[in-house]
Amino acid sequence: MDNRLILSRFQAFKEKSLWLKMLRNGVSLALFLAVVGIM
Image 1 (cartoon, one colour):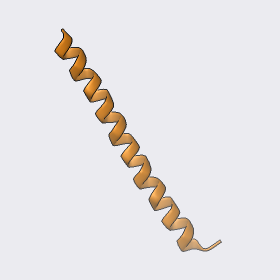
Image 2: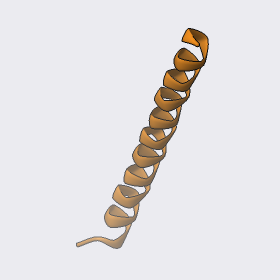
Image 3: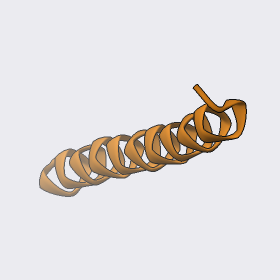
Image 4: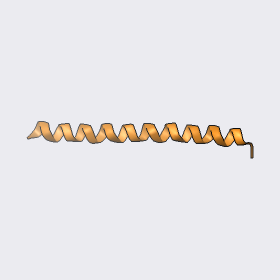
């Protein structure tokens, strides 16, 4: 395997996981705001 290929794949995976983390945080924040708004 080429090291650069592995590195670029790992970079893409890190960026994707970061986006997923941000998305999850956004969803939980929206749920929290919805619960607070209902109360």
